Image (tube, rainbow over all chains, first blue to last red; front, side, top):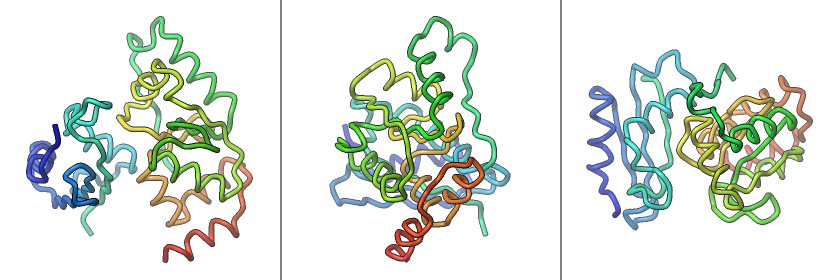
Length: 80
Length: 134
């Protein structure tokens, strides 16, 4: 089952209530997404740690062939 | 690159030959790419992109096809605490997946990492990738 942009944003938002979150449908097929998450809590973390935190917020939606999220390109940043 | 130590609990490592094999692979090869398919025949666009960058930069790396072994496919996700493939390891440390490697290639951080780790690579080729994506 595919996910909608607002579903993805809502999941991330639960863990990062104050983040700037931008979801983009890369292929226009509702299946290949990009998410940019800009959040103060990332300060002091390296990219791996930042993205692990975002993956954790998605609660297993990316788990393998049966996951609801097939492809999600992640970008994480600290606010400028 | 700062620390990126895989978070593995004692329980998760108990009696799991896949994790032993992963430890051995990243312990004996300076650069290891866990990917879908092989470096000469990738079977996923994301794996293909990272393998392509490493090939183009002339980096000598070990490729591990996770599609050939379900226990490694799941094992590497548990070992790295990272849900997606590909995954790049340099000198036993998890560097990142496709998005991070792409960013690091374009920013020059990947060059710096290889230099620090003493991994030979073609700087001119890396510059060409950056020029083409500027």
